[in-house]
Image (cartoon, rainbow, N blue to C red; front, side, top):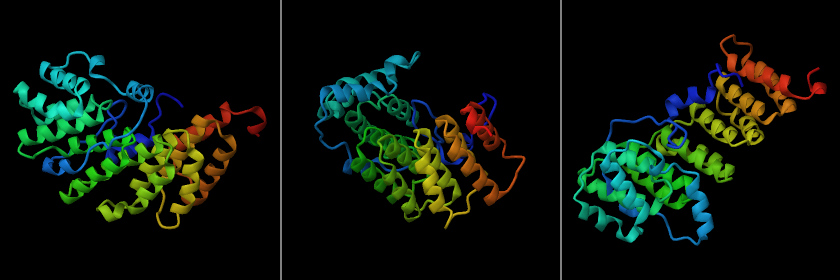
Amino acid sequence: MGKGRKRPQDEDSSSSSKIEPNNKHYRRHGNHSPSSAVSNFGPQPHHNSHQQIMAKRSKFISYLEVPSLTPKVKILCEIIANTPSASVEKLLEDTGVRVSQEDVEEVLKLSYGFPGPAVKFFRWSGFLLNDKHSPYAWNLVVDLLGKNGLFDAMWDAIKSMRKEGLLSLATFASVFSSYVVGNRVQEAIMTFEVIDQYGVPRDVVALNSLLSAICREGKTPEAKDYLVIAKNTIRVDADSYAILLEGLENEGDVARARQTFSEMVADIGWDPRNVPAYESFLSTLLKGPEDAKG
């Protein structure tokens, strides 16, 4: 894909807000929520081997890789990374450190490899903030739990956010991504099917967020199959097809790209503003085998 082309996924994320701190940005909101509700959730005991745990941690950014951290944030990250969950809150209290909402957000972004201690830190810091965590911090916790495959705890956090009216498409964009990364595409789709019950519109913006999450993980055929179903109740737009065509470009799937392009023209017609879709389709053809270009 050309470097100058604007990705439709990124356009969509302006409203759904990507939140994985390792490679995505995340919109912050101005509301607050009581962190006392966090006491009802946390990573459940599991039986991963040491090798599995270390492999999972290696894919997350560590505070050790980030230069120029403030001493406070570095100390908090060190405690989370090196302290058993059961001892985290006592050790944090003993430091005498006080935190801001921004400190909490920064620490959470660098603590994905340690979900248990990170959740304990979130709860402890809530007491210091008079139960006023930012929605950004809450969403980071949802993302952190989901990216570690702790889906029950993730939904407990979502339920706590729901009680406070803090849920947004950003929250569910994270859920979509976590399920797809965990090879659970059907759960991502099922989540999309019920988001309106959580106060988030089940509209084309949310649909595009789901499609983007699926296509980013090289599962564009599954996204395409679901789009056929979703079109029965949601009016898709140019971005919907641009996301699919970019995914098919990345996967080199010329046959599906041709089919998808034809469906796009039939559904929404020709639009000179839909440059990303046309460029993805053209690039797919150019990179495909010679016998597919005719």
